[in-house]
Image (cartoon, rainbow, N blue to C red; front, side, top):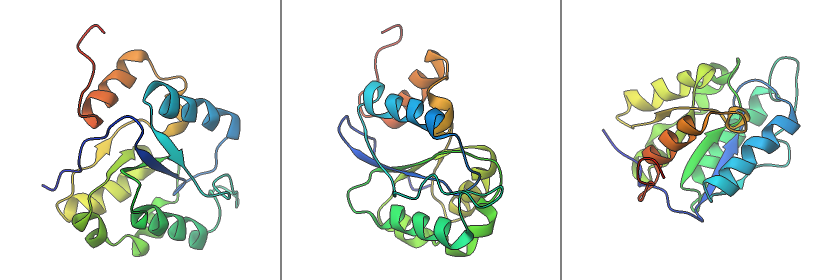
Length: 159
């Protein structure tokens, strides 16, 4: 398995919406956890909150967003905004080769499992974990566990 490098406080990360739309206020709470609690620098496209029916924008928008996140040379991880439905529709745009060459953690669950499966088949390790819209209401234990999985220097138990 190809493991992505561990994160450090101050690392830029990309937030993508490969699946369903979401409430921007709920996303903001999750972004506050990424930037405040975890000390990361979330980056996203201006059209992250796009809606097209039950999707976070059309397939072309979501596929291009994925490719941009993968190609971002500064981003150290990719966090999915929400699951739902739609990730499997962009699988043709998911080329594992760039991530094999420059690994980044992919974090998400639910519909994001389609992306995990595509990357795992290519030998890339991913994190089946909370989406950004859940981070603002996630129990502290869940955030601490995610932190321990992703960071070089996780806090000591009970910290």
